[in-house]
Length: 117
View (tube, rainbow, N blue to C red):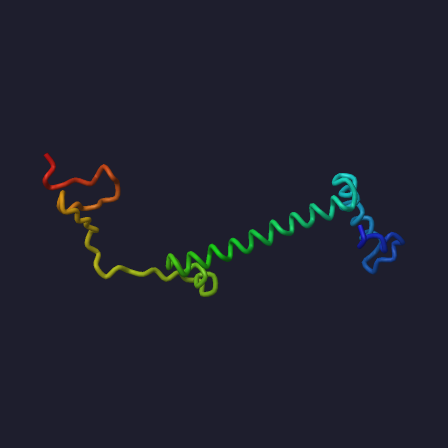
């Protein structure tokens, strides 16, 4: 409300429509939130929510870039995502002494042993 109180005399440099538009979009907030204190508290809560989301988002992207080697931050600045290519394309093999070698094909039901009875 403070930014529109000085504009009530229709002395705006952009015309008389600007103060009317500001009042139209903001005058309902004071009674809706129980006064100027309620408007201020909703404003602060929304501000802290947005700031918290930004901090968590930046941390998550840093985590994906540094810990998971996803390259998301470099992708934002460079436009390309660098993917590490494995020089050995052989299938992954899990070795367990009591069973032997088990080729992993992706699903738990696809794992089979050579000594299966």
